[in-house]
Length: 111
Image (tube, rainbow, N blue to C red; front, side, top):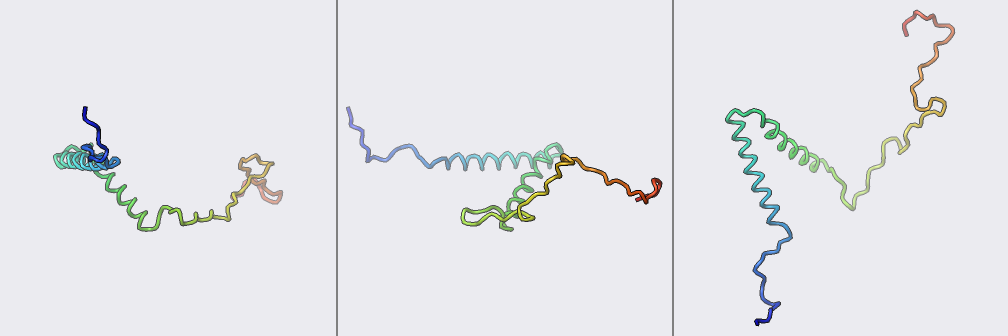
C-alpha cells in the first residue's frame, strides 16, 4: 500500500468558484447573443430581454459613477427633515379632515 503524501500537488483545481463565475458569464453571453440573433431575425417577443440587461448595466454604472453605495468607511447620510416624520393628530386618527367652512362664506361660492 502506497502512503499518501501531503506535499504532492492536488490534481483538482480549487479556485473557490471562479470557474463557475466564468462559466456563467460565457453561457450568459452566448444566450444573449442568441436572443439578439432572434430579434434581428424578426422574433420581437425577445425585445425586452435584449433591451433590459444593457439598461440595468447602464443604471448600475451610473450609480457607481455618481458615488452610489456606501462603503464601510463612509457614514450614512442623515434623513431629510432632521429625521422626524409628521405625526398625525390623535383627534383625526390619521384620517384627512376637510376644513369646516366659516359662517361668513355662502355655501354656493367656489373656494
